[in-house]
Length: 381
Ligand SMILES: [Zn+2]
Ligand SMILES: [Zn+2]
Image (cartoon, rainbow, N blue to C red):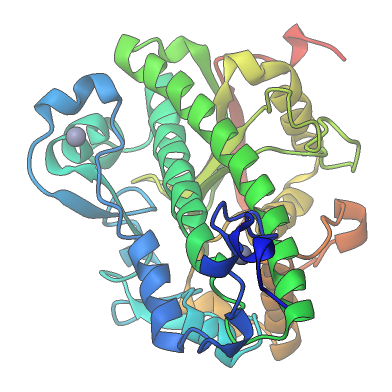
């Protein structure tokens, strides 16, 4: 096998290389060592460039800083114990040691979930209205929380896509039929990543336009105020597939349609704990339906729905040790499983009805909720 023309043909795996330079001797090659996987993983997240709009890059100043994914550096202190919070630390080592399931561990708040996404100047200036002022529910503040979440989503997707090459080499030393399976999976993951990256880039450009023109009225929001700092702090953005009653609101499989995105940030606003949803007015039809179904919940159910939502949609959760340690073992396991199943790209997307509700007490009371830049009564249907 492997003689003559076949050796010079493009490899079956789609790498674009000739077979003789790609899969010909793959089963006899050494499999990648754990440290190589670790290195590739770290390298993919070490991309350091400023996420401010391209038009502003001329004035970037200072290093790319590591900033917390949760705004206001003082926020995490509110839930920390001895300077530590629980976080899900994703690394190849952790994934492999626990069969793909990651359990939260105590990390110092300086190390807890940071994102190296903005230069010193832009990190300081762009986010000053949320970092240096109490949260007052202004359109600008809501937008900036969403901007940061959106920039981070794009950064994460770029990192995931850059691991493609490493994933392609992961079948070294495997038998040919296993090689085929691995490459097939890679192929599907790449298709998903490419579409996700394209949507994320297009979305980030829309956010850039609003930031540059300061047209914060093109962004809307929904705020939930809590009676204390949220026991789970996080920030992220996603494309909602169904509302809180389980009705489909957009088809994530429609790869050539523009997806409607929503962001959410949970932190300490300076006077109250706040959970802030934000979306673009251009995405209002879908997102307002989503939020309306959420708004229909009573305060207690709303708090629990938020907790489930965080474990379903966010990957950078930071948990209050007092709250986490106060849960029962069973409750903790339910949440860890929930996190693992939503992070696993090979598991079929489950609907909310299939996942069910955990019914776990988030440890906060909802005190108030309000809309920013729209009114539920103004639109129907
Ligand atoms: Zn190949
Ligand atoms: Zn910059």
